[in-house]
Image 1: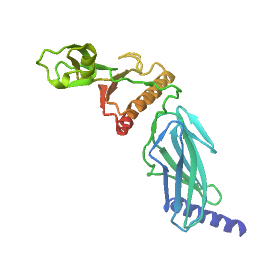
Image 2 (image 1 turned 60 degrees about the horizontal axis):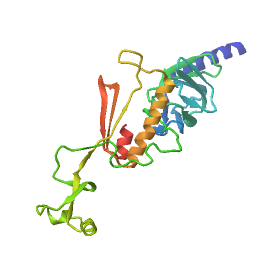
Image 3 (image 1 turned 180 degrees about the vertical axis):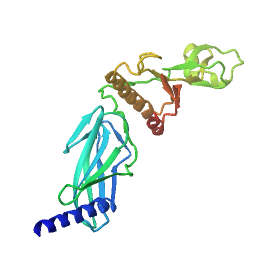
Length: 285
């Protein structure tokens, strides 16, 4: 009789767990922010809720992320550039659990949480059921870290760097003098240099350079050739990007407008962008 009762109890609970264990389970996994910088630590949050009365002795979540998201204090395995992370829960009926993982971004890029699978079992661990979670959060954008250097790239950027005279200008630059010559009587009085005239004993006028057209262009490449591999190697490519991040940061800090050009393609076209020198322009780059 004891064996019969045990067998009946086992079958009843196995059927209940197989049909209803995952029916009232909701799960959400997301990052606590949308944008970080290389080397920053942030949180990955798991939220699981049992809206039914049936307790779950154990339920495991399994999901995949990039190998460049380093999890602290958890068991994970990396295979083929993908990190597989698992987490185990015990859920009572009508209960909710939130778990937080500390994560460090090791490399720039856009990252998502993929392939989320929930697996549960009955009281004896024999009847298992599973389902895929739909809410995997949004996209995490990891910005490149600026190249660390004690000496700024543009310690003293003069106004004439990257400048060229315009072909014709109605306005002259009073800060840039081209020459001093004798007054002929046809020049306006505002152009007379009175101090120099007093020292030389006759009237002289200043000829000023026309207003210059400031131009600054940053060109870079992280490709070996047009038809070759995308990167010469990943370390050199990432170093180039970090140097560019520091360069763009200094230029926008000086509120300088500039153009960026590269043989790297975006939507099939060589990359070219005009930047207005604002913080928004830096984030766009």
